[in-house]
Image (cartoon, rainbow, N blue to C red; front, side):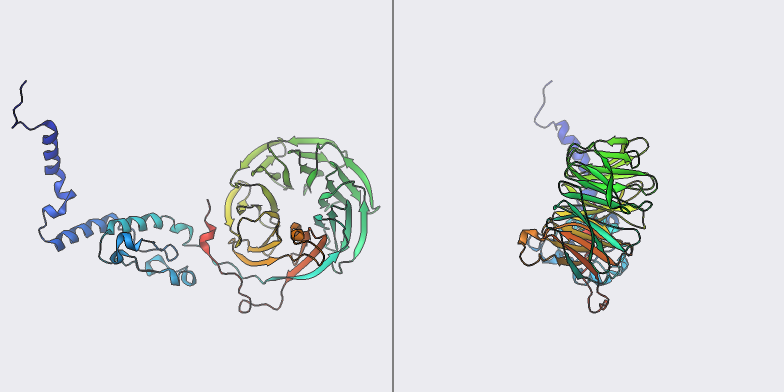
Length: 453
């Protein structure tokens, strides 16, 4: 077949047909000779497309490059008045787009950012908490203080140290009541029974010991770990104890017969904490491998593995009243709802990237974190807001590197905080009773740090 030069190709025919069918919608200038009429048409199309984008969240101001888009397309700034009025309805924050170029790009940016507005729109402001201040410094250990536990009646507490001893202190006066010896290496974990006059300790000597507090002597040893024992915890309702450490397994024992019940595996590095709960999941562990594992005690198997942390998880605490717990690594502090282990909060310290060694929480919703560089953080549990930052100053004669906070716990009333440090001291903190929201408002609240990823 021979084609002449006047014959239109199939491609050209399709192009003409497409322009005939869709050209008006694609190019309004073809039907509007007047520029203002064409602009009005385009704005009408935009308004229909982005009808639901009525306002801009005050704390998510659209940052549009002035040089790229021009001064005339900049969104009126609302950020200056954001936080004081964060609960204001979105309809009260008027979005003003000035006439200019790149209106479509500006609207698309707003639409994308508005999709995250639900993360912030209904956030409650954090409750005010009084600042915590140092009340007492207790000296007595000759090595790093690595563990602490408070007895059920809140009269005394025990600490374990790298000096291989366990010391018992009066909680009110801070005076030494008793020193227990028996371990041949650092004491890394302590727990006191609610139902029996027993204290359990775990050590770098690979053993777990049961102490009779009426006789002040060792009555049982639990052997089985292949390396240092870093954490011990008692089950709240049945007579079993869970222990864990450098051999990367959680071992569950009958406390009376010393019979091993389970060896819970799964972690690939040192286990830093183990906690027992009255209902499933009855055992939770954290590890240097960056994971948190929840175990079914009856089946002796891992129910769920949490991989949200990107670095070693060193700190963990269980809320004394809510069915929830918190974990900490150098990337974040995260709160979890049980039993499904749903992520509730991502607490962002004002000084990020700190190695957090310990977490504690009290009944009033104060979450404490202690870091390797001596940084102390106090957070509102409900919102994850850090309301106070402090520093652990090492005692005179100690090195600056010995400011690390290694262990912590609140007493059973939640009114006193006990911290154990690398400068061989124990510090007791309490709330400043003279402070008020006016005199001590605390650190400013930034809800954007609570983004859950």
